Length: 123
Ligand code: SF4
Ligand SMILES: [Zn+2]
Image 1 (tube, rainbow, N blue to C red):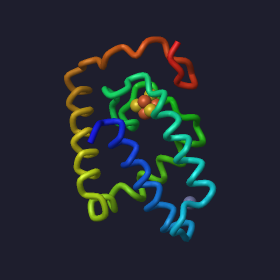
Image 2 (image 1 turned 135 degrees about the horizontal axis):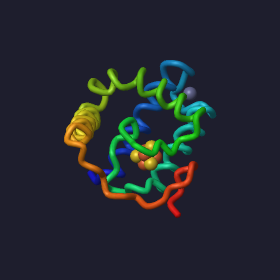
Image 3 (image 1 turned 45 degrees about the vertical axis):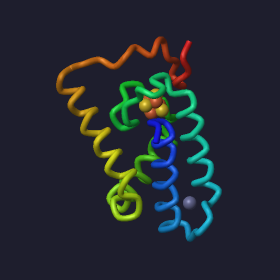
Image 4 (image 1 turned 180 degrees about the vertical axis):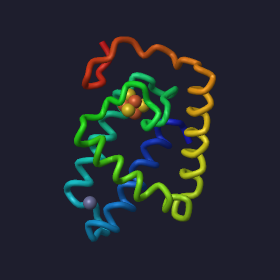
């Protein structure tokens, strides 16, 4: 599965797990649907494209503060549960995180995404 596609599937799975536990489900509630749409919108415009780090390790953090906070809550809840429900996505995500930590330790810079506005748009 391609990197961005995988990222999209991982976020969607996490939001579904979170929503089902907190908002009833089985369908996504309006708030979680909006959060997932926002994440997808940001992913489409990610200046790193296929070379993106995990969003948690991103030097830009293009999310607005409110969505970032909500996504953090979703990840905190759904992250540990992902291993049982979506082991492939969970393990790949953990490997991505490990790669990001190694890259950060080595001080290796990611390719310059260009000038990025506060909203994360590339200029
Ligand atoms: S810019 Fe950073 S936070 Fe935004 S989608 Fe790309 S990796 Fe995630
Ligand atoms: Zn919900």
